[in-house]
Image 1: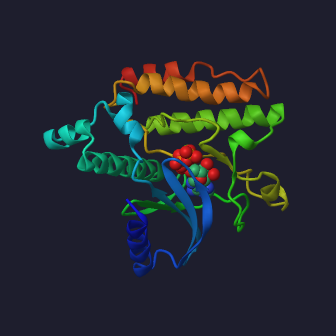
Image 2: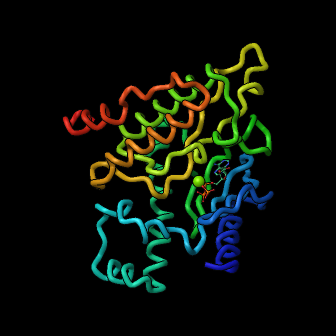
Length: 256
Ligand SMILES: Nc1ncnc2c1ncn2[C@@H]1O[C@H](COP(=O)(O)OP(=O)(O)OP(=O)(O)O)[C@@H](O)[C@H]1O
Ligand SMILES: [Mg+2]
């Protein structure tokens, strides 16, 4: 994928009235560049995947086990042909889009609302630092927390993990880099302020379905451990109460 492809995708978004312009770049990473864009309804995010997106899908078998692949795709994929790379990239983008849609359906889970997929881009809700702000929410990794806050945030994220698992989604790359924290203060000013905003989980292309992927149990345990270990730096009393093992037991018993 090159610049021309991006221009094509942007042209399609404009033509369909999804965005009017790109306002700025939020972050450029190895797999994707995240842009802030103006939509008729307000600011939104355009996450544009690079050609090399899906590399983990290529190199790390634990994410792709359990996916149905046609013979032809599997061969191209193994040989890393141009077609094979495009296949991996497309699978990666489709996975993020599909998982965000699945999780967004109930409206109850703290993930960005997905708007559309256009080519190699996913359009989604912008998680701002504060309502109306152009500043994105901070990542959990950049936040300094007092112990009380650490305990509260940890339990909110455990609830998010449980809610996602109930919808058969294991994030599989959950870490303080993929959790955003809208400012609490700015939401608490007004007397009638709504409850403090919850942390929001992002970045789902590698997410797996425990009904299909045999590594889901291990990936779930790893997600819980990553997050719990981070919060223990702020308060050693943070514990996970074996949430991964207990969730898995419920799943195996068929009650999820
Ligand atoms: N919906 C969103 N609202 C606000 N900021 C976002 C949103 N999605 C992504 N970002 C910002 O862009 C960064 C990268 O997004 P994301 O993690 O989805 O992509 P990535 O390719 O995995 O990047 P990285 O390699 O840095 O993890 C996030 O850390 C966050 O700062
Ligand atoms: Mg990320």
